[in-house]
Length: 168
Image (cartoon, rainbow, N blue to C red; front, side, top):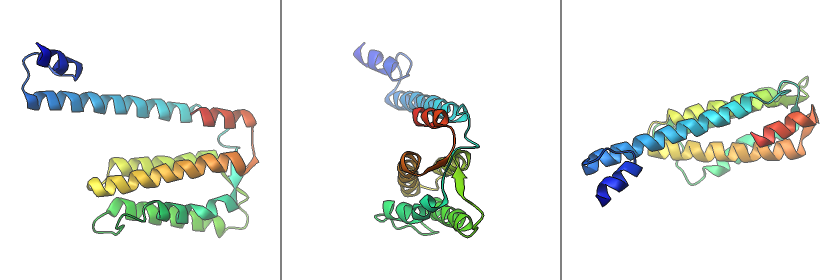
């Protein structure tokens, strides 16, 4: 009875084998993670004014180096961590295009969120556990930078949109 009770709480059926219990709990965890991801995506999508709120172009210059430092303990290369390797390169190129264009005064929150989604998608498509761990470290560091940029590098925009973004 105790095993059935624990198994039920883990998402398994009564009289399930240990393997079925593991599958049930993994499925339940996946479902919860998907639900949380959907809530975060909805919160970001609901931010009004994300097209007009921007951080200074200079604030993005530090992003590539910050992300590289965040994964310095990983052996980032195209063979063993291909997703992380591509993510770092993609951010470097995107940052270079922003800094290389003197007409760009700021980067919109919508563009920052698009970059965040690109990193999130890369985590989901990681080639192996090391790649996933490196990509998660990259995304965490990007999120930290984004929080700091919103706090300190606002150029233009609606303060209410910023409040919504922080809530998201």
